[in-house]
Image 1 (cartoon, one colour):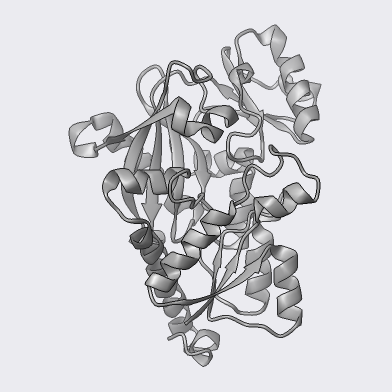
Image 2 (tube, helix red, strand yellow; image 1 turned 135 degrees about the vertical axis):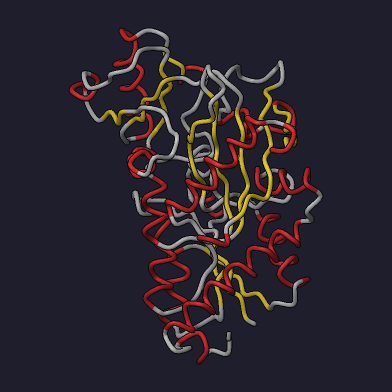
Length: 344
């Protein structure tokens, strides 16, 4: 089976003049190497495509694939993570991970929380601040936690993200809004334990792989799983595997994560990040339906390493989920496009 690989290579954007922080979500060359090696070990033939514009050119040239393994984040616009899936949908080419709707929704942390709160999933109160008038709508008290509404990899998250006085909130939001040219999400600061939950599968087939607790070391930026702490996680962060049968807080954390994953319609594999309030109740913070896949540096593979799941097995589980989903969809349509390409 011929598998196309779509991704944003960090080195390409750095060479084009973008900064380290602007390209923080993009992939290193060794991630693509690892992914390609894993697919080869699983018996797939891979074809490197690259980012959305490369995909556009290849499609226009008539190239096609049985499946695309898509980890492209995109650079511009609130729909940047949806650009590759949308193009592949137009050409009826199956792909791993979530569809354009989920990718666009979940990139916007405020809209995601609107949907989850309406569905009854445990999440904190929040306000999306686009101007001074929005500050008046904040009905909860300090300390606050602020971050850009549509960034990943901890971009915009620093110790200054914790705002302890209401009088300081306006200036802090303005600074962040100017720095990232987007609205700011304001939530109550959660001082409890922080977890990341790994998931595989889609809908009723979705299941929790495992959970790790994020523990900041003494030399780390305090109280926040920040951009700096994530970038230097080998030196600043300790990850502890925690199990639901040994810890009731972990059991509740995994239940919230799985419910959020299913409500949002996320597919194949990813992560949900949660933090506990003062009552040790786990609250949804963010979902990452396009989780990083660097074998040693990204949270989902780190969790798999703690669980004893080899990198190639993680990629195999993602592929099996995508293939099962696509075959089920092809069956509903009478085995049309996917079957014509020999994928069924």
